Length: 343
View 1 (cartoon, helix red, strand yellow):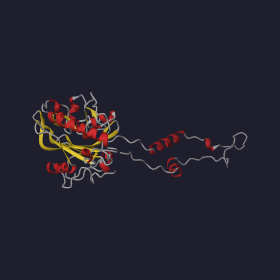
View 2 (view 1 turned 30 degrees about the vertical axis):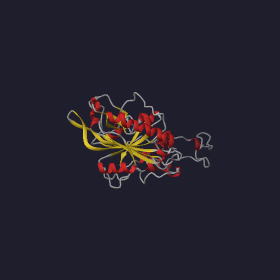
View 3 (view 1 turned 60 degrees about the vertical axis):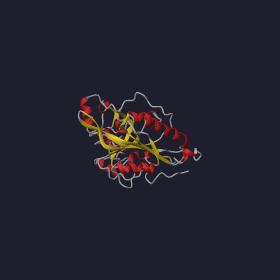
View 4 (view 1 turned 180 degrees about the vertical axis):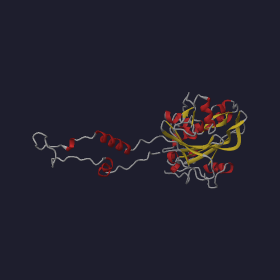
């Protein structure tokens, strides 16, 4: 968000409103005389200084200068501050039926990293949209899990932050989002990223994926034996055959199941995980068994301990799945205007 700036007024307009009417002697018409010789004294008006007025003028001119843009919370009705992570700069079509959800531009280190549609009631993201970065697929170890200040009232920062240590500060966060304690006794589930760090390259982009607003409870069996291996396959595919920017959206369907803590429904548990990519500029010489999966393809899997194999399918099939399971419009479309090849 850019700080509002004031248009500078010309000095001829500005100075009369600031300086009082003071008599300034003229060098062309000397009006001062020496008290003893009665001879005119030359007055150099350019050296007359009024210290209090100079200070006032400096303060006013400084106030007119534009301020550097702050990192402001960007939870609003659009993804305008992180549209670069969306195909054609547009959010998925057909989200008008999602009242009560938050569109969050996830910031880390004063930089927007990806976009998330967040459900405060279920305390989970419904999708994260990001751009794929070529990498060796290594995960960063030992990074702290973070929370999203933009979802907490009265926050003065837009950057995700490590969880505070004080119990009172944690209580203030629990209403709007999940906290680490919500996952501590979840035996079947663990934290699974929608924007995985394996699909990012720079230290900052990788670190930004470790926020609970990018995480959903995933069944451990499904996550480690099916979902993560599939995401690794997508990383290799896009590394090798996507020549331009690849836009990825990963999300969930839900049924109302939750993780409970203290006999309270805390965090929604997804029924399905799904993901779809769009790479308009791809290598036409890719092997035949992969070429038909460009420019766009998708997959989904059941978030359970059984019957949880990942099914790779067309993007339209995943859109149909989301349409059946979730409250979206009939014209729901992941890549607004479809993903059109540019080759």
